[in-house]
Length: 233
Ligand code: DX5
Figure (spheres, rainbow, N blue to C red):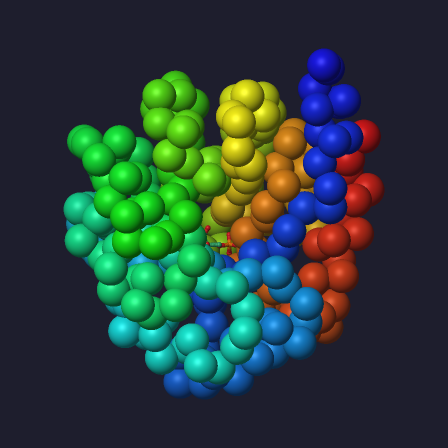
């Protein structure tokens, strides 16, 4: 199957809102606005100031937002020892927990612990990390997150050099006997969503593009979906 045939098989990419740019004084309102805007999921970026040079929030914030929306929640852990948070994130109402391969010396054990906590498990790869890092744990993985920025901050420039890795991740995901999503996070907006979708992404994470769109989140979602559709073969 050619890359184009491979990507053509993907249904419309899901749009996931990163809550990183949210107004945390009005988090409930922002969650409701995202739901009204039509995003498919909300992603909570947990950062510990050690794995990445930024500190955000913990499972308590996720739990507080849970009652504000019916949208599915996923957590992107940019932390060391992420397995320590599996139980509390499950209790907080997350369905999916994404950990960085670079933060997990025992990735197989970490993914098994996440699944034992009742969560789907995902693996995130920094730009410099080869896809091989997930090759031997695909049986435990429901999502491969290809980072198109170096993690830690929103509003960064999309790294187009990651597109071959997105396509390779799509190929790898399609060898699994179970569904494996290919998610892309970092610099996703109307100008880049088509490229990421064309490369093979079926989940697009956007923060700045959603919260800073002049027309508001609903207009941003429409622009992202249209760009993603146009970009696919
Ligand atoms: C990086 C974060 C960001 C965020 C999205 O650590 O993971 O990628 O989710 O940020 P934008 O969409 O503003 O690039």
